Length: 285
Image (cartoon, rainbow, N blue to C red; front, side):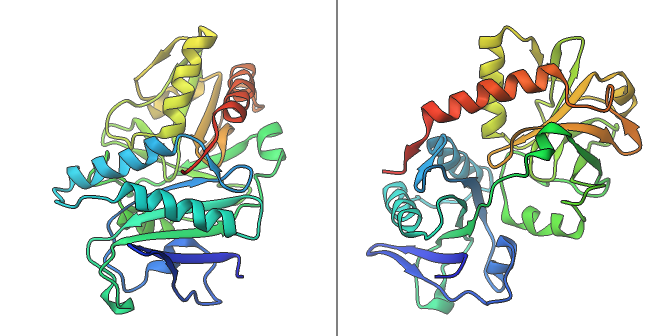
């Protein structure tokens, strides 16, 4: 079996689709398809997920925001996710599931639901101990911020990320406020409090978990975006996503964040988050 798998979810179950040997990223799987909405996360312990319910419901809300009249077979999607991840030959996987805008008739299917898997080799430890550097993606914007659309996932491929100098990129609003990263939420820490944009951004499942944990830790938080002019005043910064948990940011553009090292607030939250994951992961069915 290849490291990358693609399935269409049909009434009878999941059916594998052909994958080119040249595919190295999820977005390359969908050439020629009518893109729609999707969600992406990772597995734990082969076939377990963290807050899968929330990922599915966010995708349903995304379809509603786009005005779609499509009823997702959630039970069928769950069965497909369980079957695909249980059979995957690697212990952990990145998982993406899509609802396309049109059925996959080019594959003789009336289904619009896809599941894709890619090997998850983990996140390098040094990104947490040393932190990462991020830059900006000034021209990149979500047309419908609350809808997780596949066309945005394709558009962000024009921006180089994942390098030592630019691990991620930040999206700004027209006033210069930091909204989110291209594939993660952004958090800024100042004077012991956490700040993150509450409007104009995708609803992050990991961010939702982290904000609930901040209450348990008695760390104040505010749904207020950080302006680029406020970056020098930050003590810490971080990004969060399903696959990366909470990752410290030590430089934004040319500006060092705090003392240029991961700070105590980020490290404290990450430790509690990891304990939360160990307790909360569940299979899809």
